[in-house]
Image (cartoon, rainbow, N blue to C red; front, side):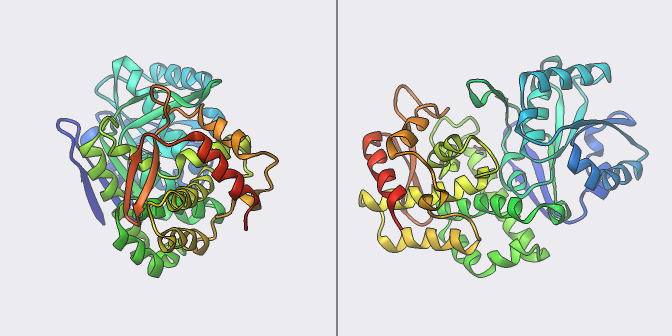
Length: 369
Ligand code: GLY
C-alpha cells in the first residue's frame, strides 16, 4: 500500500492507495468515526458495486452504514441535490465533530465535500473515490463545488478531507471508456511536470490501464504524490502553481461546452484533446518543438483517447470555441490564463494569450488532419 501525506498545516491528511481498502475502511478511518452509525453518501452505482465491501469494512470495527444514495451524473451536483443532502445529514444528527464518508467519483466527492463544508459551519469527511479521475485528481486537494445554471463548479469551497482511501479494486467495475477518460488525468501529470513519468507511462501505461496491480498502484500513487506536493504549495490556487493542474482544461472546456457536456465527449476525453491542443498551440507560437507536441499526441493516441478535434464532427468555427472559453470560471480580470508548455514536463501559466489567435489556431485544427 502507498500512503501519501498531504502536508497542510493543521489540515494535513493521508491518501492511501491500494487494492482492498474498502474492507479496511473501518480500521483506517477509525480515528475519525465517533459513532457506531456512520453516514455514507454514495453514488448509486458505486453503492451497488462496492457497498457490501464497505459495509464489511465498517462491520469489522462494529459499525454500520446509514446510506444516502446519489443519482449518478452531473445533475446531482445542483442546489436541489445539495439541499436534500444537507437536510438528510441534519436529520441524521451529523455534528461538527463527525465525519461523513463519500463513496463514488467526482460528483459525489464534490457534492459531499461542499455539504460538509457548510454543515454546522463545517464537519469532516473522508473520500472513498471509485473512479480513476477521482483517485488521481478530484478526491485530493479539497476543491468542492456544485453546478448552477451559470456553469459548472461555480459555487463551492475549499474544504479538505481528513482521509482519502483510493481502493484500486473499485476501478475493475468501471466501463472501459470511463477508465480511459480518467487516464487522461494521469497523462496530464507527466505532461505538466514530470517528463520521466511520461517515459514510464509510454512503457507501462498500458499495463496500468489493463489494471495490473503494481503499475496501476505506482501510477495512481505517483499522480497523488504530485498533486499533494502542488496542493501543499498552493492550496487555494493563488500562486499559479495549482493552476497548472488545469492543463488541457481550457481547450477541453470549450469542447465540452460545444458538445453540451454530454456523453459525446467525456470530461477526461476533452482534457486529453485539450492537452494535445495546448501542446500544438505551444508549438505554433514557438514555445516547444514539433517533437514534443507530437509526443503528447502519441501518448493520447496510445491510450485510445481522442487527439483530433476534426474527428468530432463539430459544426462550429474557432471563434465559437474561443467564445465558450470566455465563460470559463478561470477568467480573471478580463483575461483567460492558459496552461502552455515549454517542453514535456514543463508547463507554465501564460496570462497574455490572444484569444483571436487561439480562434485562428482552432479554425486550422477543425479543418486539419
Ligand atoms: N482538479 C484541479 C485541482 O484540484 O486543482
